[in-house]
Length: 125
Image 1 (cartoon, one colour):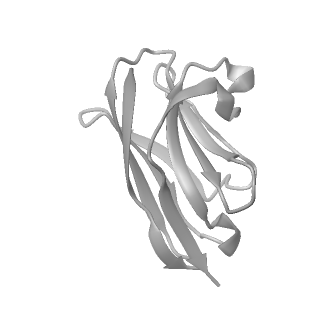
Image 2 (cartoon, rainbow, N blue to C red; image 1 turned 90 degrees about the vertical axis):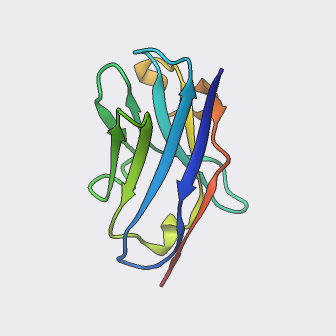
């Protein structure tokens, strides 16, 4: 069982930056992917980005490409989502998740079976 504890988030003006953290504990493997998803009120959960432990190759949704970056601190077993040039439409609850999706399904939230508690990101105009 994998546990994920999130921190970070908050309120920021458009154009600003935030960093989300996801501390991971429990058994993972090189096939484990850490994904970031977001969900705004009344909307479906949306894929943001993900990275596989084994390859360390990041993948991003088109809506955040060039603005968001996944990174990790191996010593702390913590993954980060660095968000810059934030827009009001980035407002949502952000979740990190762990799973072992195949590459073609890496953006599908149902492929992830462990989730963090979520953290609110609000971007004001």
